[in-house]
Image (tube, rainbow, N blue to C red; front, side, top):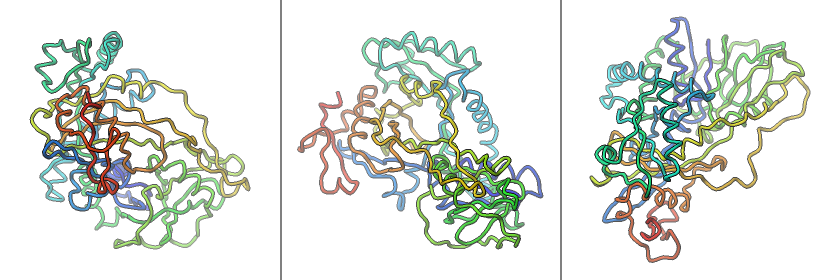
Length: 454
């Protein structure tokens, strides 16, 4: 093989697709401990629907077996919340241009190769930055000027224009305008991944593409002199890559690379086993796919392990919302832009190569007491017409279990901007902000008092 890519999310499959298109001699293996979209790409968070005034919610994994389309991850191709001139601005702008260039072609190929008529679930509705306080007037105006100077179309809407553009939206008292970014759009990340898979799989019959799903990478294989990684090993096989091993494991990268680097071994001179399709033993979470690295110079210099912390967030999906909650644009609270402000970079984390003789070094530790989730209003409708509201952001490890207080906070925050949401939430006879019945403890109904949403 020419390349070994670890991770079958949207990043790993985009890389595989681009490499296969680059040269007819390229041969690629994509390895993942689970299935495509099992990690951040396909995270569905919480699914909900309303009936008779009640909002019920289920954890995404519990409904995935019978209604997987509901919990599909969303890909927001948005620029309005980003800061021009920041470290990630050019990367985000390039990514947006790439998706705009390839989306139509990817849809055509998906239809031709797999018979899919759903496209990518594209929604060209634009995005809207919404102030949460009258004091945001000046920062919102500054952001407007910065976006315009960067060449991004942006329009400040007057109160009358805002009421006409988004009737469901209510600004906080004293706030007068919102910022519309008409070129922002979104797609269904799961559909995008399946389209990428279809394009990659057309090369399988010629031996140029191999997928090894439900196989965890356990170690890296090093060249005899210990200077570079030349492949990976799973429980079933060794996969040699003449060009490189590519790591696309997202939030699992730190732990993965630290583990794989400390359990690596020299590559065998024997040819690796041929990669075969077929069922694999069930592995652990998506995070158990390996990450790789290189050791420039080898020896005591070591290899750098990236400092990547998992960030958890909930997105609540209301299935078939009433007309009063049918949004025309994607909405985002202006406070959310603070998450993209420049931050000081962390120093690199070092792990010894298998030949360095150093002690084992673990991945960067998470804080023992992470701060509570930060909540900012976001709201969009997907291509099914379902309402997606959020969102929360917290550094709380890899747990994806539902957390009732965080979901309640998301609903309260969103109801300040979308008052029609309040009328869908009935008071509960139990005590506290949220009541949990016996089914609620297994992921069933949760209700909130209406008075807490005002």
